[in-house]
Image (cartoon, rainbow, N blue to C red; front, top):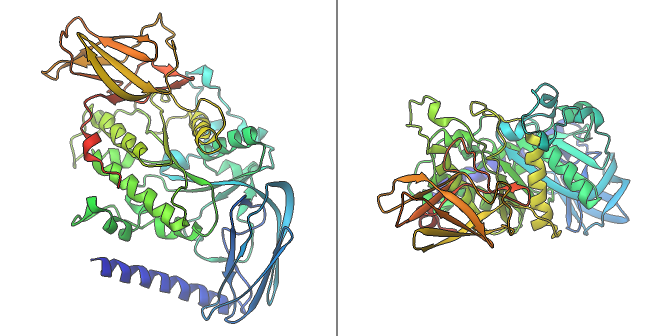
Length: 488
């Protein structure tokens, strides 16, 4: 089986090389660049930088940038590449020159932080939509409906992946854009607001690469070879077209140095009533993408899918219940056990349970940025709401401890809602909860010998457990996935 996947991979790469080579010769053997290298781009600071492209076989190519000059000679297939030494942060526009049989000048280039954001429609959700949505109910979260009109920050640059063009050589060199006007209107709202918060807090240029497809499951973003290498999927036929989007929309980006990944996807897989299998799919994706970029410690921050009435949807494949989404959240949370990962909660970011595309994309982007600022850039900030850690039982009380829970955060007379408690029979009843130090004490008059507690275990959560201004992740203390999910 592995030999088959290896053969398919080799055939795919050979075909791509052939296409590029033929394209090169058909354009009079001019030096050409991939789509991802263009004017207006941001190059990742403090890492060796790849610059690569295509030309005639045995052609000499020279690259000049930021005081560095590198030469290369194309191989028999017309491919060439050079590696620039790590670059210092630069907010001043610079020009990168490539010289061969022709001369290419890429202008207005900055050096800063670069992130890739990917997923399905909630990540793809375009900035232009903000101008048309109704005013959100939660006024505390603001409403930047006129952000496109106000956006004038030239330190934020954006690249929107075109799945049909990314793998083809580029002769225009205008695929990157300043985050404003028509380019910004078509760009990911989550990606932009992440960049805006990051740029403001770090004070350096930020580049965002958006590669998303509406309605996509996770499998197309993972190569068949990666599935074959994950023990969980051994002897399992994986559906949903593995590799369909990875090959044209992610793999061609992998030479371009970045800081990390943002992922907002899951609704399509939740409709399939998945739980533990989804955790393994995300694990497989993370391992594949990190391997493709050649950096096993690249941060991977992702979004808990927002509340939605899955139980009210009809499906001819599976039975969707009120526990479908909580179990999916649980699977998403298992991925936090992998290094350099983080998940933001969105269980308070939907005004309508029938809306699969909640409008609070600015807050999603901001929360992802807080995660990156705290965990990647080591800023001393609060970047997470409470995350359940462990429980202990004392008489009729269950004492819960959390990560990221400050003293006395309750805003409702020290009482929290959204908690349920159960005894040995497994029947959950509403519970009261109050804070004692950094623990929560949960109980109910109906349960004398408690066994388990759960919080916001519903597709329509209303719990009020917050800390650091951020909501707690839903959880249940009797989580069966903890023992099922293997991180290695």
